[in-house]
Amino acid sequence: MKLIKVAAMLTMSAVAVAQASSGFAQDKALKIGAIYMDAQGFYAGVRKGIETGAKDAGDKLDLIETNAQGDVSKESSFIDSLISAGVKAIIVSPVSADGSYRAIRRAHDAGIPVICYNTCLNDADMKSYVSAYAVGDPYEFGHKLGDAAGDYFLAEKKTAPKIAILNCEFVEVCVTRRKGFEDALKAKVPGATIVANQEGAILDKAVSVASTILSANPDIDAFFGEAGGATLGAARAVKSQGKTGKVVVFGGDMTTEIAQELSDFSIVKAVVDISGQGLGKLALAQAVKAIDGQAPSDIKVPYNIDLYKSSDDAKAWLKAHADGLP
Image (cartoon, rainbow, N blue to C red; front, side, top):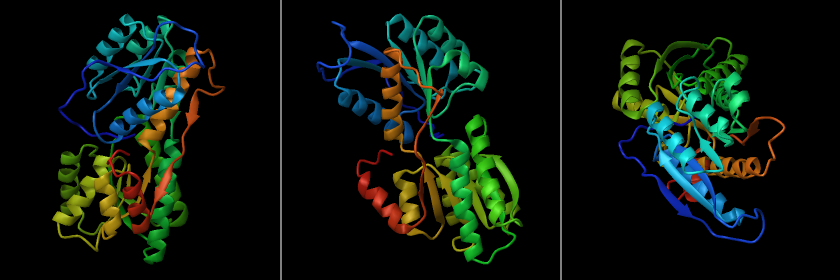
């Protein structure tokens, strides 16, 4: 999951998308609602992916898009607005696994299929009220990064590294990311220990929390940032505390700034990522299928997870994402 707090908010707007002959036999444009948890970073990539996917689909579609700003009450209000607008499907990354279910249930009860991406409801509510969940497996996400961290420590001949975690564990996917990371790391380096695990998903808070951890644990070897803000915040704290060359960072979620840090390779050593644009396209495709009555055999529809672990990997990512959208 990717989390970056911003003040800006998208207004409810209809995006007209190209019309073609194949697909649906409606005279009017098919309305699909899309709710983003944020307006920048990963969610800006998701938005571009959904809009690109709608154009590529070749059907007459209207997207009604908005930004929940990480606020359950705003999300609930937007879902009610989408129901009133007569949308045929809703694409959403729920703010809360437990707190978002009432609004999503209202959409379900109104006969509107709901497609989750990135985050979703708890398992029971997801099975009851969600048609599909486009997601990169969070355990694999953490496991790939833990594997890379293990390889790094073995190469450095560190058999008992101390790791601090900056987490986003107010959402369940981040708890699962940590489990995957720890399982893979300790399989390769059994002596590895987690000496701190504190919330720091948003950049400013992550810098502050990481700096405090470094002061309290001057002998730590690495940070694991469970989300993009945590990854970049840890790197900035290491740099500002004069720990470059002594403490490294392994993190989730590629952005331009994180790719630049990995390209430098002095602090950030590996990043695992789920493409926002790719996930957006997948979520849009699942919404179109749900409208057409084609539910997936398994609610969870997997998306690929990428590992970047070299300066060359980072430079390639930067070249491929010149617009800065992940």
